Image (tube, rainbow, N blue to C red; front, side, top):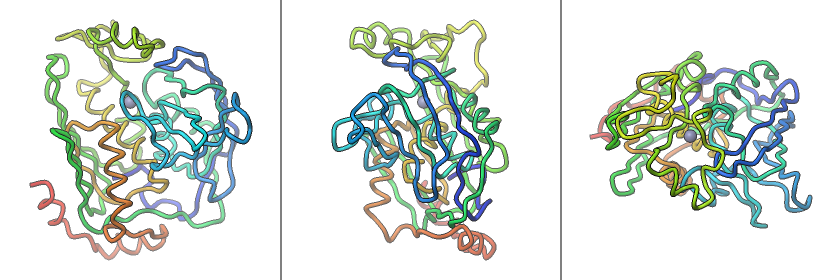
Length: 316
Ligand SMILES: [Zn+2]
């Protein structure tokens, strides 16, 4: 599954300019400043907590550093320094083809902005992307990998179409059952997925706030669901905005693989914990994937080496 620039650009990329923005954390409610600096090849995506001692400030955006997944994805380093709600930013960076970036932040939570990735995609597009000299690598899925957590399930399977399919089911009539499958080619992420906002439930809000969570949450940065209705006056951006946002979250969490994944994902009732478990399963089974340059990936796509049937078997 993955990413609008499938096999486009055989070299690593960073942004052409520094990106600055300010916003509030969904859970902390704190105002936070972000500065995104272009970074050298092979840097990856790294957060720098400007408000802690310099020797403790670095947190690499890697699946290995996920320390909490209950309400959002939280990254932490060996010094116990964390940065939370990273998934919408990471989805935008991966989907726009940014491999290397240093992200300065002066608090412990990435600003929620409007609850989607759309403002981030706009800022990245405005800054522009520059190609760097070193080759870009991708993770080519060779055989299906699956994880299950109760009713939650995910399978990552070989495919040369970058496709992601989600199935969600909520008791609230405003959401109900939604299934959506998208091929992440061309500008599909930008137009169909990035604008989908995060969502929350009115009957859980008070309890979360008592626990010091969702303090920055409002209809300005989330879709608020009250049983069978959407509270936001402007309504939904898409009839299936909820399923689209789950796709956005999956893409952000799987960006923690630190390389684009070439395969397709089917996931039922996805969540941040399941997404991280899928990456842990993948990295525990090195026979199930290959780390290839984009030039090698393009050769495989041209030769049509993918066995579609393995995907169908895996789903059934
Ligand atoms: Zn989200």
